[in-house]
Amino acid sequence: MTNSKKAPCVQDEVRSTVSRATSTDAHVGKRIRLRRTLLGFSQEKLGELIGITFQQIQKYERGTNRVGASRLYDIARALEVPITFFFEDLTPPQHATSSARTFGFSETRSPFHREYTNASPNRGAPDLLSSKETTDLIRAYYSITDIKVRKNVLELIRSMNN
Image (cartoon, rainbow, N blue to C red; front, side, top):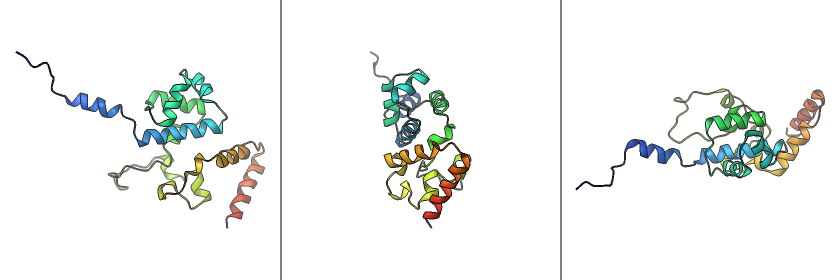
């Protein structure tokens, strides 16, 4: 008589771990939501642009479902950002050390909110990019069509912080 129960194989274990959403998925989802709302897109509009339902966009934004590489590429194109945008401000895994990491473009430049405040989400401060006030400010800033005026507004704000 043979045992109908099959021993778990490594491939089965990899599949089960790969399908689980992680804190990285939640971070990517927040960044999708941030950019979508900055552009004034509804979840339905973004879904239409990339050919999926708004419910799937909701799952991505909540971090419930993982975003595959090709889907993230489609989302980045629809939201007019580089893929690296979704990983900015991501806290590195605990086991990674700075000497062992390779730094890419997005990791070598200052994230938007750190230029203007000393607060960092990694130090327990509120996530500044997810507040309505921040998105309203960014929308107003980018609605200034004259680049020189926009840069002057930025310099004015910076001077107020000193």
